[in-house]
Length: 357
Image (cartoon, rainbow, N blue to C red):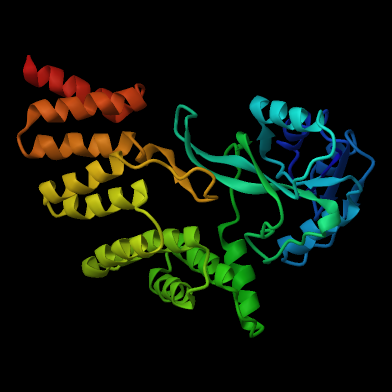
């Protein structure tokens, strides 16, 4: 198994070396495509490979990634972002694959850890398509939030690529601008593009417009299941921001049309009831969340704290409000099993100890 690492970069001098150090002895070729750096990014890249290319930025991430892939010559093409790090577990799994003979896989999916708490515990992860058989001629699509739709024989690796932003400021309006330029050219957004445009509107607090586009996305009935579920969750938040409590709850319930209840959705429903002091109904939903298990290899977003820690903390608060101190303490202790360093767990523990004394 021979691998070409194909990356696109811009102004990544702070993190590029760390990324390449984590993978250079695994891959057989490194291709770096620079889209307009004005720092030392290209100088650092040239310490690892002679295959450093310039690509004029045209507000299209897929175009840049497809150019990078076109320069890869090995059997498999792999992508990383400059602020990614290949974990030791992922390095071992890739080395194990390389020790085999010919592989039947067309796409290799790897877990992507992208969210962390203050103690660096993973809070958000999902699977992403990471390596592709070159002969299958895979192409990136979408100008923003680009993706390669997986096809063929798909294989999953358990270990993670770790995304470490390290406080780098994101250009929040860049993605929004790209989408709005597309619309200004009378281009029709794909279902995926409609979802991500709505998401950019939401993050930039254009809630009314986000509501229109989330609903437009859901009404296409052509969206990926996981995007539909997340659209319901974000749409609920939009309704909350605009004071529409009825639709806030209804759209969360609609998410169950797409798949089994997700723990984060159950907790969001619990929060609606908690905020209205309906603690018994909130308990039902938090307990349902605490009994859910993340769907393995669903490609979906897994918000880890919702599968244990958050529902337990919320159940502690509910039972305290209902005057059941014994259950409140028990659920706080369960939350502490998941996150013993949690500030909320430790605060509650001290509070209960003081109350009992």
